Length: 245
Image: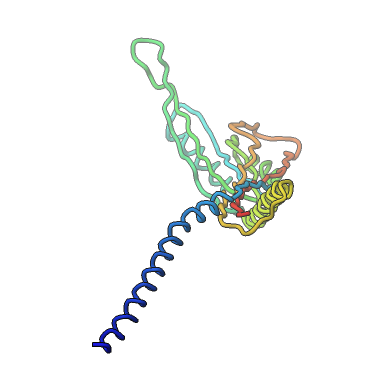
């Protein structure tokens, strides 16, 4: 019987110890969420901005041939002949991304009277292409001489590799701006940054192509070379940091 008591008493002690340990864990678990909430509340959120200006060295051009006449077939033939000459010129200059963007042939009506009547036809053929900005002025003059008589639009952009590099630079500047803002605020409050707990990249915004001309009709010939300047584009970026202090 005494032997049985010797086994029972230690078992009761173990159970008491286990109970105390369990209560201790429960107490710790009850405190942990509050501590976690406090840690989460000690987070500074800052947004930095950065930008990088780059030269627009490429021109996107859309130009074409228009014609009018009494006969649809004659109008179409004139457009085809002049368009062929313009396209051959563009190909000889090794322009990039050359493509046809529109072909139109429409009747023109006279609405005076009881019934509309066709008085003629108008048509157009437009193409678009891309080339270095410093060469586009001369090419426009040559295209006019070849038969083009309408420029729909010219816009300027930077090369893809230059845009990528500018995007990286803008993001770096935005990150540095956010860090500087955080340092100023925390130092003024005698606090110190512990770690970055969140990063949001609002991406680098690609620049909008710079317009040069829209729906500009040209004369059949010009006496001087057309001046064209590409200007600059700016890539903007924003970065948001969450910093625990």
